[in-house]
Length: 384
Image 1 (tube, rainbow, N blue to C red):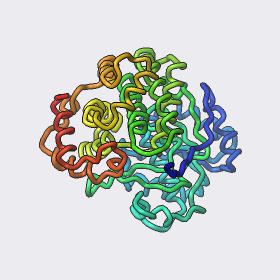
Image 2 (spheres, rainbow, N blue to C red):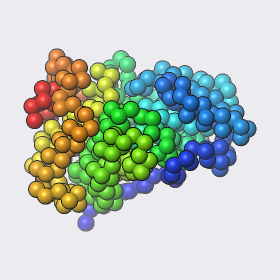
Image 3 (spheres, one colour):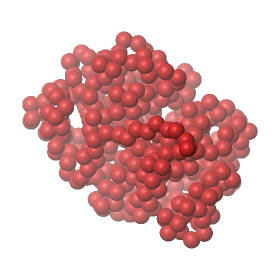
Image 4 (spheres, one colour):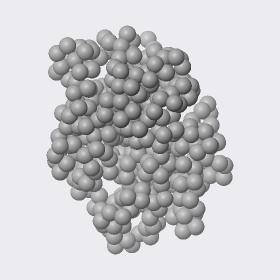
């Protein structure tokens, strides 16, 4: 019998309209001066103004930090930490998609550290360098249903010199509360709803396919995939459907819970592609998905056959692949990387970076540069 270590995530508060409870959640955690970390687009919306107003009305000394790029970089974190320290903040409310949530969690951790952020890259025992007493409490409030960062213990930061995406990790980075309010996702455009929803699918699917013994993660992943199957098209086509939006938020959190088991080649390629081309992470995973699944077929076919039965699809692996392709067509996901402006001039560089990406270790087949180059070349051309 295999030995394994498992973890499960944070306290989750789910339900429409529960953003009104943020002041009470701050009180619960002893936060009196929260730094609300979000992105520039969200910072300008009435939704954010309403949240800030509720916090201020409750007597909380809230301030907003929104200087965050779509793929956060060290400068964003440094500026956020400076604002946190200069204003005597004592907690973080991270509001937004994966970028804002990741940046918020890293800012909360770095607020009490005296070493550079790159000292905490998720390699070896680097996490032990963190002073856990210096990590400020975080309430994570996703406005997209994709990354699941609200239940994660890490954040992704792009190194602007190498274009590598690095994972900053410490168990104490996990938010104390994840607030899943589907009303906050209603205004998300259809294209972003589709791309982030496919990101949630990629997390659940890669976790399910990852080797290793973690039946709890497997169970969460297959149910997360079912929720995506039954709700993502509705969330895209009926943007005000709170029921579908809510199920997608849950599927997103489930994917990030499940992928503690591992990710794989989708993410190993999406990370360098995102770092080099500054492309949307969820869209990259959405495009890469069928190409990676097909490349992994020999190792995952029996597992995908079982998934097909759970999804009520007749035809095993081929039925699941066809469902993914049909889903992408329905919600407007391109079939190739070329369609989102990625050329073929740096694919060898991308393949070399993919081999070194931490996600590569979770792939069912240990691909080398040759295999990664073949996958990304096919995805660039649309040659499934």
